[in-house]
Length: 447
Ligand code: ATP
Image (cartoon, rainbow, N blue to C red; front, side):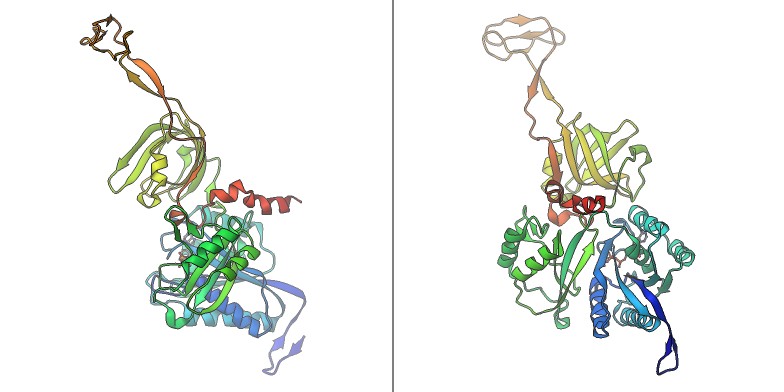
């Protein structure tokens, strides 16, 4: 214990204490990005010789959250603090930067910052997982913070504390990494200048350790945002090494101000709830479930494709919406009797917005035709209930029953997913499943 120049009592902790910092809701459609704000806070702390333990985290929460700007992401980082002074400095810098850089003019920008010292509890883990599954109110998050010794700071309505608490608390059972490169401030709002050829090359060299950086179907690069935010590009991958390597290959003709790597629950399917029967599914929930097609696909206005499935507890309308492009052509090939495992979210119209599906069993499909005559010609109806007659040799058949013929199905068992551009941040690309990349963390934890 000692006194600093100002005469304040400084506590030296017996052993370092983990300080968790959560930040959310600082950006708007007009600019800023909470990832960037986190990155510059960490840079400022480094100048004070304060270093985070581990990568900062970018945690995606319920994709149906009403006030999200884009992908409902919240940020966190943690530091082992040695004394009260250090702890106060981290808090001061974080709050100062949020006040300075958050887009306070945005109608739906309501920043929230939280600080928490110590081990994350089971109750906090549970809160975080449910912030992905469900929709919370600000009051609920405030009460939760009060009951769990979480220091919270609300700006405007302070809605950000909902996500900020979840960002520090979520247990990752699978993870990916995203490297975000940021632009010089004078470039904000202008067209981004990236060398597409280098992005394709990067993909060739680093895929599948990196993924979702090219939209293969449309053959265009998918790493740059189309908003006036500070992000120049984001590279997604399974490991920090993979995204760093990819970053060295990508060329841009504008100067990069800085970059930051985030540990994230993106592309993990952490939003998918298992073992929920159709009858118990709720709006804004995302589910993975087995079912059978009970109504063939049909097109509706706007280019959307719908069909119906059942799991014996209820019937559900599933949709491949227009932005999912060629995924709709695959969905159009489904037929009654096909057995599927579907991944998707239930929207406010009780329609399941499909992200991917696995076709487990392909049902037989038949057409019913007039019989073929001995002479080889197809017979014609001889009149209602009068059987068939050959137009060539006049041969007759008394039965009016058509002949059932099996037709070749145009789809095979396997996984099918929406294209990169239509993919939700949380949605796990099939390549992470087929390469086993999604099992790495699970296996490590098993050891
Ligand atoms: P970006 O991806 O550009 O950072 P965003 O899409 O993450 O933006 P935010 O600006 O963070 O959007 O706004 C989302 C708001 O929704 C935040 O205030 C966050 O706290 C809140 N929120 C997050 N999860 C939930 C939830 N489960 N229920 C209700 N509100 C939530």
